[in-house]
Length: 296
Image (cartoon, rainbow, N blue to C red; front, side, top):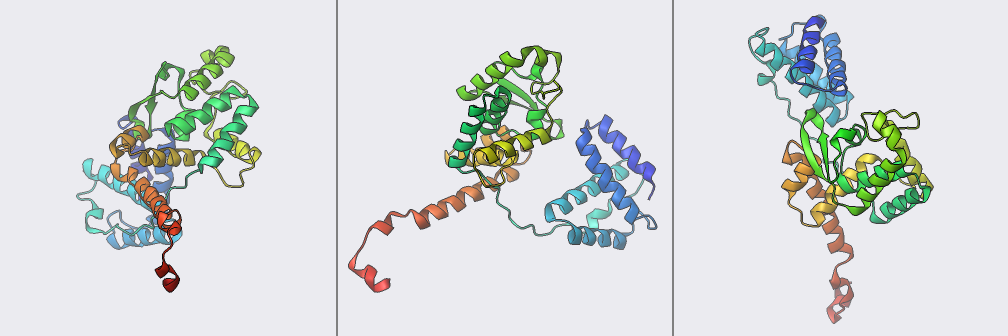
């Protein structure tokens, strides 16, 4: 398998599709791994391709294997489009497999309250603003780290999410707005020197990892003995909106999901909570009859 084809494909992904550096890096890793496996084989060798897919399923978790297969499919689609190969080999290969249903992990309201209380006690306006952003918007940590000052309005935020898809988030929560104003006023001079809104001590854009470590620090300081991650705020945000009977299509737009199927995973979380309520909080537990003794 010629590595030149991979280079050509990645160049097209960058120039024509506008994929970001993180996505391109993942594609490069996936395709180079595939190239090493197919080094002595023809690109269209069906049995060899099937062997590689089996290897992915054995070596990686279902979600990772699925992503790597998607990278290969996109690459072969490019080869067909450029008439380098005659047909897409995956059209005759079954790539579907059953994935275990892993429900999104959410944060208990009591833990959220303790976490927010802890960050407010720190009087660190930047950290307060980031935590409020996580709680009130459901944004991805990557989206928060990349917020540019020019994209932040008085009541709106323009987000470039996955696949560089743009969406508008309305900033209506008073706690969030107050936190953003306080942070901006304190660091206005340094923020205006940077393209990015959230900056670190060196006045450079804050990294995703810094936000993860920040969340971990405040969770520990708040006495929360659970592993709290920034993405759990997103899960919690979506789940709580569903519990408030918000239409799932609105939630899909706010979260920036390209498919509503992705958003529907949160309905499973709500259903599990409903089951627990019906099991543990059912009013019938407080109603006793003579027959109850017979069936006890």
